[in-house]
Length: 264
Ligand SMILES: C[S@@+](CC[C@H](N)C(=O)[O-])C[C@H]1O[C@@H](n2cnc3c(N)ncnc32)[C@H](O)[C@@H]1O
View 1: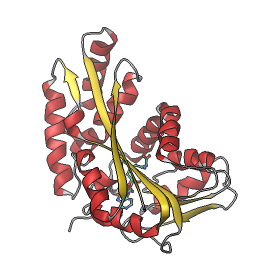
View 2 (view 1 turned 60 degrees about the horizontal axis):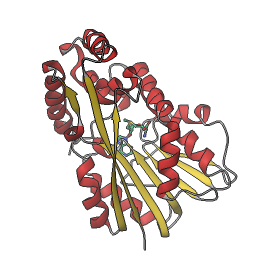
View 3 (view 1 turned 180 degrees about the vertical axis):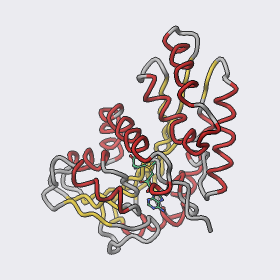
View 4 (view 1 turned 30 degrees about the vertical axis):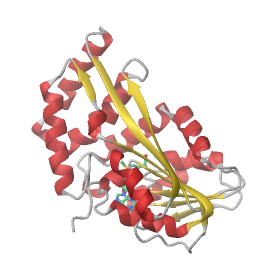
């Protein structure tokens, strides 16, 4: 089985990718805090973050569960080593770092109240095994929230052939590495299959009128352009799209799936 489509240490533009994750986290921090509260995170929860990357969202989880704990799980040692530096305040019961994959969590059964996986499951070859493992570590009454994209929700109007080409090629490359650019629509079924109940799906839409163009471009195309390496001049594309958007000639929109389930 392929190892997945996000092996940080094999990406050819690691500092750009870290910067992209930081921008993504900062730009929607307020919105994300509201999503997490609505999904059920509480101040004294034991929280698990699967695929925490450099820890920009871990910082938000620590802020939202100040009287609990945060377990940050990440396979890349390089990324995990950055987490401490990016988390401003430690929850009362600690910040615990684990170098591990999501389908083999180094946690006891029923140890966690709230789990979060953000833009992770699209990169995992067998996402259902991660959802099932999350179910195992969730306490009765605990919850899991997964946030992920789905290329079916990407709109560029008027269409831009280079964007369509990037999307198509990146879908194929990511799939060949075990990832899935259409994961968003599948999360609900996976949570149900893993045993979660009360599973709910929301789609959050973001447009180029609401988010700074650079942030939306990076969410839509940043990672994909890096998959393609030099095959696309993404700087030129960026500048041309930015000019179109600033002049109101072109609209970009994307949707993100937010799926929440509960362990009965
Ligand atoms: C696009 S990044 C998202 C990072 C972070 N969740 C965020 O939103 O900023 C995907 C992350 O998932 C991690 N990852 C990849 N495969 C994984 C797996 N099987 N289990 C857990 N994490 C994984 C990667 O190392 C990377 O940190």
